[in-house]
Image (tube, rainbow, N blue to C red):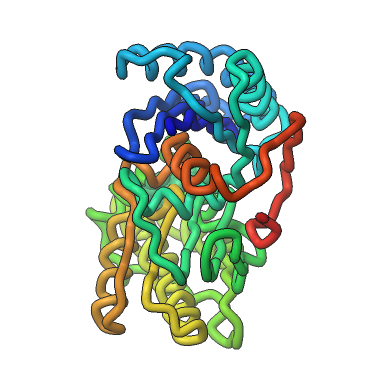
Length: 334
Ligand code: KG4
Ligand code: ZN
């Protein structure tokens, strides 16, 4: 079976084709960054319009690059939540129209479950149970995945997501949107001991995250500095070190609580090099396996949606109607 994946939950228009026998055959992403850059954030209305302008050309690009036709596709998996209402609707309408025209199955996939599957691309090699640290622009959570559809959110951010904190701090330093990768690049030149930021939630007994206090501390430190290039890179380095430390410390605790021996990290921030290195050190120390997505699958893409759809094709009910779920916890996935 070949499954077409469709992803339109935020500002990336993605389509992909996944073969149950051969794994990922190809994927195409149209990034809308340049449309949102001037507003320094995602504008939902622009995102919806861009998805509707781009999705057909992405599909044609994919299918022609593989020398296949619509008749080679056996099912369509699409993101039906969580995400921006209008953006999700474009992908859902495209998926349903395509499926109806071909009389094939439609499979709705939770975007966060898609990120879980991104770790197992380009082939499907799930290892259960696993602990997923999901770190993106919209979400930061620790998810204990005991098996398919058995997902428990054991910790999450109480305020900003990790990617959001990176983006806001990058904006403070005058870096382009989205700023995570730019800030991390700048941090390479800085002294990470220059600013001594307090680690968030040091007293907690649980495994939650919080980044808004750190963000405020960064704003204060920047306003009190002389705002030269050295201050900029030092602040970037100190900020990044604190975020990574907080993510790793809390993840380590969650690994102890669950006794899990497979750690996965997914979402845009999983592309962060210091985080990847620190996670590897943690897993070496604990003697457990670390599974990280290839860099191209860290940020939003349709390959992960097609892969999840492929895995679940025989397990789930097919979507009869165009329903989307803008707020949908991964724990409610069935
Ligand atoms: O998963 P994603 O594409 O979108 C959401 O579902 O939110 O993640 C985007 C986020 C942005 O906040 C971006 O700044 C961050 O991932 N990001 C990074 C890096 N690359 C992307 N943050 C830190 N370091 C990076 N190298
Ligand atoms: Zn995402």
